[in-house]
Length: 102
Image (cartoon, rainbow, N blue to C red):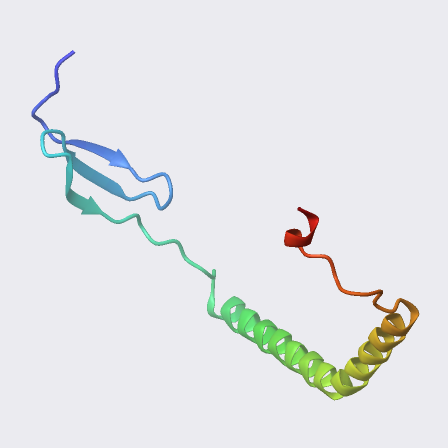
């Protein structure tokens, strides 16, 4: 089973491009990109998709604004809960270190 001196073509499994490889040097000597697929069938579908993206972007922005408005209240509640938890279980003596266990 000997190697052929002739270059061979391989299709890229990811993008579908054709790649020509030289078997002796094991390098790519030519590349033919895959044909591009149409993203939209017509202009109205593209416009509709852009409007949907704009609506989604506005919705996400509104959610972030609302979260920012409530941020102070949420942080205050989290702090109060942490203080309450700290008071319920006070620290008993010095914390153990790995060095102390020897």
